[in-house]
Structures are given as structure tokens and as C-alpha cells.
Image (cartoon, rainbow, N blue to C red; front, side, top):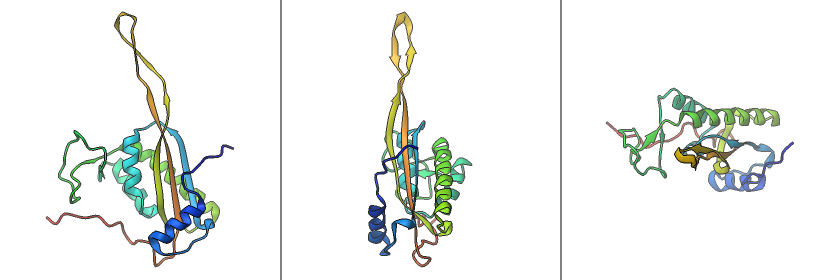
Length: 184
């Protein structure tokens, strides 16, 4: 079985939970999921990872299912040059997209995370995503034939995605994800 190198150890995750929520947890209360070499956009993966961090597992799954159905978008914060600006319900983030392919892969990864948590005996209702990251993977080399015997490289990028969730006490679990909604 392959051994994946997470960017966050169990002890570091427990310390992160203590800094953010003020609660001491054990490494047994942490569930992880990793998806190596996914064929999807790295930039969109980074935006989705940034957005679902801090949500409960149920909230993240519900939001990503709405993204797949094109009901709710993901706000784009970093990679927004030359992007269309929409009238979205987020104050200060007018750039939003519906990364359907990325959302489907993240939903599969969240299912994997949920199964890993159930296997460890954790309460899925109290799982909060404390770490989500997308790293560049290998490039799959391809070429595009051109005229006069030439060729242009047409590489395909891959992404390594990891999600870490922790089981928190009931009084600490966020009730709903807070967004800055525009009052209209």
C-alpha cells in the first residue's frame, strides 16, 4: 500500500485545532483523505480548497453538490485576472465560478474522508475540515502535431489534493458557515 506524505502530521493538526478552536484533541480524533494525481485544474482546486476549509463535512458536501448543479458558485480570490465579474452575494468578492469537474472530485474525496472517519469510529456530524490543500502533481507529456512536421507540447497537469478533518465537541462545531452577504 502506498504511503502518502501529508503536509500536516496528526500532532500538527491537533495543535492547529487548539490554536483555532481552543480545544485539545487527540490524534485519534483526526481523519485524513488524499487524492493523488487528479486530472483537473490546479488553480480551481486551490480556490475550492480555500473555500471549504473551516466548514463542517456536511456543509462542504452540500455546497459542492450545489456547485455541480450550478446553483451556488465558488468565490475566486487569487486567480482572478481577466475573469468576468458577476453580481454575486459576496461582499467584496465579485469574481465567482462554478468549477464542476473540481467539485465532483472534491465530493469523491469528501466521501473518502467520511468513510475514513467512520472506520476510525468518529462522529461524522461533528467533523470540521481544518486543513485542505491542493498541490501541483506531475505533468503528463503530450504533443500536438502541427504543420510542416513540427509539434507543440500539450502537457496535462495533475493535482494532489489532501483534506484533514477533526472531530470537535458539540459546543465548538460551527452551526453554519458564515458568509458576508450583501443586503439588497
